[in-house]
Image (spheres, rainbow, N blue to C red):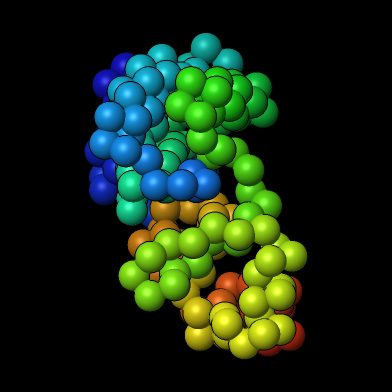
Length: 169
């Protein structure tokens, strides 16, 4: 089944964000996207093709969206996606499925550190509630479009976890 364009997915489309632990080179990114496109073209749930799309941002974030109006992703189909991501991690020598690191901006650069390291930086004042973070737990394309992915730490789960800020939301 041909892939959808990511910008054509409805706001309610389900979203998975995989953040690489480093910026990918152009050849590695091209290989990743070609392999993901092949996977998504054949991705099914209970033998029904999924209407899927992908996006690639900042040379390190792979976004997979599924329009579930005709067929929804199942536990087995999600497991298959994660297995494919893990396979590509081995091929490219990059971590994509690890959701533990905190990814944030340091000026224009994007940094990825452990939660303990981010907590140390918060205690030292090197990061603060205004630090722009990437919330890779966003689950819908609509939330991504609404600016809920890259935002000040105070507005994400990071605010509660590292700054004792009440997060509205």
